[in-house]
Length: 404
Image (cartoon, rainbow, N blue to C red):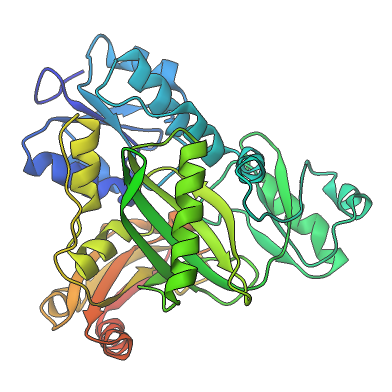
């Protein structure tokens, strides 16, 4: 094991979601060890050392470190590593111990639903089942439409809206393909606006919060193509959403750091919290909050795990959009060329633009969040101005994808 310093930062995951963590660590002169089961991850090149191990296996990670003691452990953008984060933070006695309850609620949606019930928040009907759920669902009294998803996956992987009985068995099989445990959630469909709320806590209080509107692709899979920031909602509804998020953080023993929640805001103003990721939000969310508010949640996360004070006071406020770049093709291919990226980066209102897939890299259909190619972040004085800048940027960007 080689790292740039005796006590490096251990980063669980090396996907594009963790790129900002590695870059911030490098900016500070911190050595990093990347852990991922795949060698082709884009953040691997940013790390000083690499361990090819599943981020779910904390014992294998500790064995692979071979006596190297990290100064801190961190992750972001994915739930898979959260229990390992807890175990390794305890093992290495890091400045901040990641809470077990937060890991459990993030990695098991049934645990999250029980947490909502115990916290006295408004919930909805659900059933945990296996592949035989096409018989169990009618017996449970759950009426269609329902949402079928893996109990232990994130990023909309394996998720399907089912409106007809014939679609139930295929949806269950689809969810099972993404479930580590084989368990599947069947949930009552709640109509309303699809929002995300992220809170960053200090001593149990939300010192920063942001609510965005999801930009969902058409279809039954709830695939997120981006976020509009901030979501246009009234102050009473905004307050209820943030208060519900903070109550659940308290129930998870999470007193310091970030957590994000998927939320449905019903027509009557009731917020229904669907699930939690007790870590930095994925889909480039930190890029968006930095552009819209001047708030660097990645820097604050590193300060927190290193035991240092952190600041999240907004420097400004505007309107912003993050667009996730995905393949327009329904077949696998290879990224042959990228044109227009430099022009976009110098365009007014473009705060961030990056294609994380290298030239020659594999491109898969954008059927889940793991198959993204990059991001474009734009800002504007009004929502319309931000939309216009995004449209211009996407018209300029050309991704040349050849069949593999």
